Amino acid sequence: MVDLHTHSSLSDGTLTPKELIALAKDKGLKTIALTDHDIIDGLSIARAEAKKLDIEFIDGIEFSADYKGTEIHILGYFIDTNNKRLLSFLKELDISREKRNKELLNRLNEIGLDIPYDFVKKISIDGVITKAHFAKAIAEKGYAKNIKDAFNIYLKKGKPAYITRELISYQTALDIIKEASGISSLAHPMQYNFSNSDLDICIKDLKEANLNAIECFYPTHTQKQANLLIELCEKYNLKKTAGSDFHGENRNVILGNIFLNDKIKYDILKDLKTLL
Image 1 (spheres, rainbow, N blue to C red):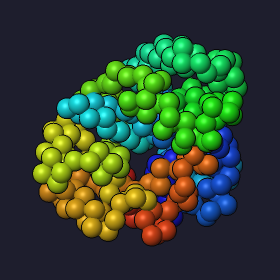
Image 2 (image 1 turned 120 degrees about the vertical axis):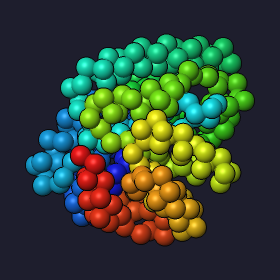
Image 3 (image 1 turned 180 degrees about the vertical axis):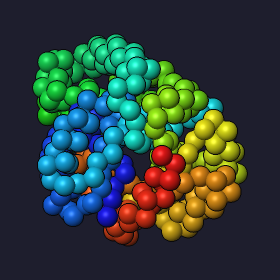
Image 4 (image 1 turned 90 degrees about the horizontal axis):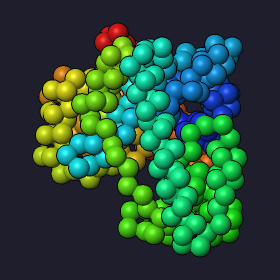
């Protein structure tokens, strides 16, 4: 039993890297990948805890990227966390994110919400501040009933505090993962609302840009959707990956499980490792 798509509190999850590994042990996972958004700060902590608890650990990351005007997410596995280009790029993202967060804070204050930045930092503990942390701050200050409500009222596209962000190209994301000796996978492909023909074109383009795999098995994928993605893997000679996209309390999924509460089998990872 494995899970190749998880997030910690250093990104937009609710469990610390150490707590995430402890839960993986409790759930009986053999292997886990930590794939926080645009950050690798939790990997060393999680890796050390996994070693202590005799769990195989995979260094991962999840990049947000632009594909013809649509935001897509690309997972990177087995990345070299000391790769110079990766570290330099993540530093650039951190600077850009800090600037965007200040803009978001100003927007919230302009519409009458008293949300101090120190309060948001406290909520994020010692990780990256994301919109999820702003949403939690909004809810805790009483401006929304919960995190979902905060997004719907203030933070979603078209809402008063929505801030656009400049995305990297999918080619850049794939290049960085490859340069860091990683294996790339397109995360949750059915979330992008492509038609079947457009999804085929997207996969073809990504394959030509050195994509290695597709996340075929995912909690919200139906069997029919999974079968379609498997066909695309076969068509473009890509590997299959699987993950719960676990975020702790921020998302109602079970660690190590996909649709119909089916568990993710090790065979998926075994086949992926043939690319190493």
